[in-house]
Image (cartoon, rainbow over all chains, first blue to last red; front, side):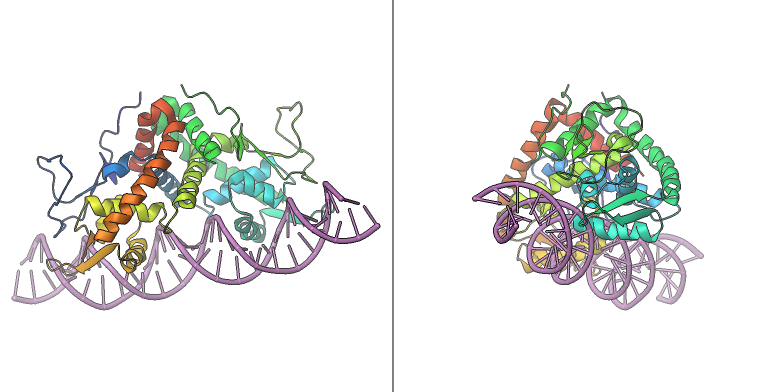
Length: 184
Length: 184
DNA sequence: GGGGGAACGTTTGGTTTCAAACTATTTGCG
DNA sequence: CGCAAATAGTTTGAAACCAAACGTTCCCCC
């Protein structure tokens, strides 16, 4: 299942990273056993790091985030905003706190995020009459429209990820979910 | 393989998130088909989001990062610093740029990071005599010692992640690596 | 051998994020 | 009932990050 990365193009390859073009210094010191036949002195040894789930989680998330943001075109809606809009659409009249819990963001992050979305006319915020502490949130028509377009982009983006995950996508996602869920 | 999350403790559960304790408003509007028998009105529907790899990547990375940072004890060495130290140990005399490429961080992020590590006496930075543009980096004895301790913590942390990934860890990591590698 | 372009590191400016402190409201318990 | 504790949202301060612009140094090629 899923053959090991067969030399993709960009940064990480077999635990080594192509280095500084010419790397003047770094004349290969102490590489912990493992004599290498003929590797240019321009690579970086990731050592134990390359087997840590945490590290790989980060670089993968990073790549996904960056590509989504770069190709999201039109407005500068990054993954965070997109997730918020999605939850808002599926949960009209949700509160800010509940939204924050849903997308794993602190409430102090949610406040300015929503103020921005409101400024753009994508979200309506009204003080709840039932509980005057809270704010009820709904997508505006413009918000629905914007989300529609973003959905296309997001689906496109995730299709690329799906292609990489291959037939084990479901299990792959299940593990990610378990990590978020069970890691205290 | 890997039975689906069987109701873990914290935030995400079966695509729903426990909400605002009492959630005064939000009396369940438009939940897109799917009549639910008896779910409290206090949950959040993640909708399509819960199947996006990108979204799950983020919440998993987030959880991992947070737990690592919270339990790293002693000094405030977060995953970023830890990864830098690891690479530094395995690649003496590496340059800042090469380090940045290895751990997927911009060079403008690396500069202050290393200045901090230097201030703490964990890293030595010396202008290269071979190429006077670059700085050669090495771990100090104190750096080695600090890393030693951090390794224990990191291994501990990753053991938890390993336990969650289960027997398919290798494939799981391979997919993460492919995402970082092939997603342009 | 001289100059254009590339690469190294730094600086600056902006974004996203959390944590903690704070105000306003609501709820629960005694 | 009445007050203590919890909750909603905001503000403030700090950290980590990127992107772009910049000065310095190096290298390739004419």
